[in-house]
Image (cartoon, rainbow, N blue to C red; front, top):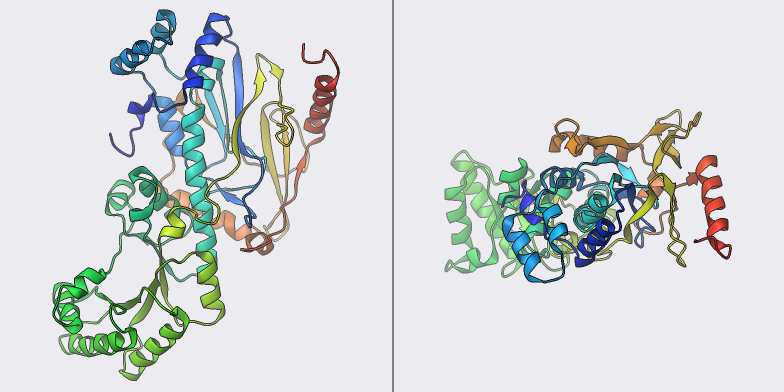
Length: 456
């Protein structure tokens, strides 16, 4: 199994997706259904979401098959009848997908994507679709916040060792790169996605030598033009002084020390002291790289205090989105057999029917407001439609954009998002309105379903 081939994962689903699909078949329900994937409300301190995970979803839908081993396992559970297992044996996704492109910016209740297919097909894929879009969009949003806080300084993803599994580590690296990180320490992600890779050294490397300065010299001999020294193993300021000695030795040999890294302690005070040591030694070109439990909040605070830090390694808190580790994401049926449907549960009311999102911008190109509308509703002056058809008859419409193209889309869209909505704390809600057609339909359906006998 490779990161680009999810086809062996047909059983990566919740049991009820399969039991519902069998029931649809037994009841003769094969009408076309539309399911909408959206976030009901944004996590705390989030003013926007970054779209990620669509490519994995489309590849999964196009390749989804049940193997003979899958079918044998399902038969062994004694839950499913032979007719349903025969259906799964020839299963192919035949539907269409409308979606917001990866790298775009969305807000609460706006669809990431909508899947339309015979209801059993659209139901069966729910778990994987949620899983991929939820994780990657959550991490891309966290990464975008880190990149905004870093104000253009170099950012490297250090999160792999503490992400929740290998697949999450791969997706975290990709999501970070989409949202503005410059590189990752994850070598497999570099190979799989064509991303830049970066790394320094560990404390174990330093402690394996009799003297700290011996470790620096050894590393410099191996990597004379790309060395970063980790200087906080014992005493950070003394480590900086030893790094300066080796850097001068490197100069004499025609090379330059690239950077020193701080990984603990009071990063503001230490970065100032280390910068002083380096400048006093005539090494203004040696940059300071900081890591150690950082995310957007610490990065922003350090730079607000004018810490002389040139780059950051962001790891654990980024890789698990520590302050907001989940989003209230849902994949809900909004239309079946031409009939708009909705859910009326308390605090979980859904918006009926297939949809489009329109975005209006001001003369300066900045986003002003969005309108959630019916897919086929004609609206004048509502702005640019965001959802595009990405799949038809179970086949992707063209090759997916490259990672660099997705990254560029994010950069362009994020630049158009007004600054107040990028705030790390208490960002105001971006205005999202319902179109007249959607508002009227929603009001009518809610009245009908609230009337005794209206659910008949």
